[in-house]
Image 1 (tube, rainbow, N blue to C red):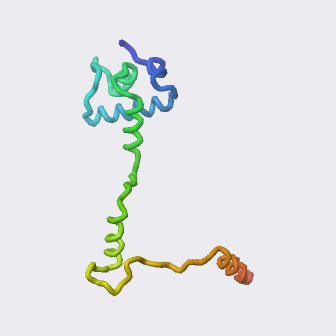
Image 2: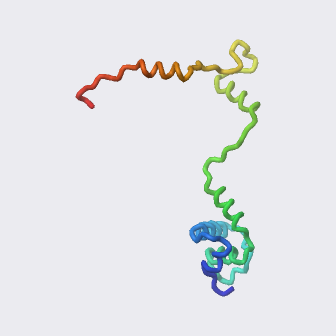
Image 3: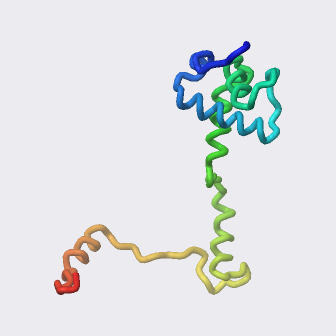
Length: 131
């Protein structure tokens, strides 16, 4: 393939904007030392990335997942409940030998009706000239 264009790749990735994102992400990977899957032919990284997408040597879905993963700043990890309990007791400064503290923290429970009654009983602040 002498020249690669967006039209060569648009049947692989339907959205032109997504194609640009994927190709630019792949070009950054190549510039960071990632192995290329097509002959370079003295082409620059963005052209090589487009040629890889057009020749289907890389899956657009894999590139998309890798792009999403590279943009994530915080990845949630589901941890088992057993590991969370010691962390809570350690945050409270509790040792496992200390038996006079309760095992779990309890908070006061308030029903919705009690909450509404409390809100209705509130008196609005007096108006002043300062506001």
